[in-house]
Length: 95
Image (cartoon, rainbow, N blue to C red; front, side, top):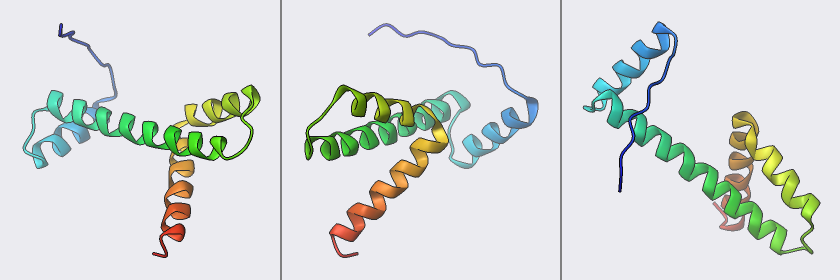
């Protein structure tokens, strides 16, 4: 697999926080950023799969797929939806 280098511009305060978090984790900044990005993508994928299960329980329409995709575009909405799914799943398990 070919690798690609990317460059990210950000405010100095954010860069310093990322460096500190990476150091606290014992990682270099690049490794820390890749792990953080992968964790975020995994959460998004889990949320999409959860909503796919919900949509499978009822007749699925193109409009419902588009609505789910739209809601998951916003990180804040995606976070709230993931939290709601986790709460619902915890309730199903009786936790």
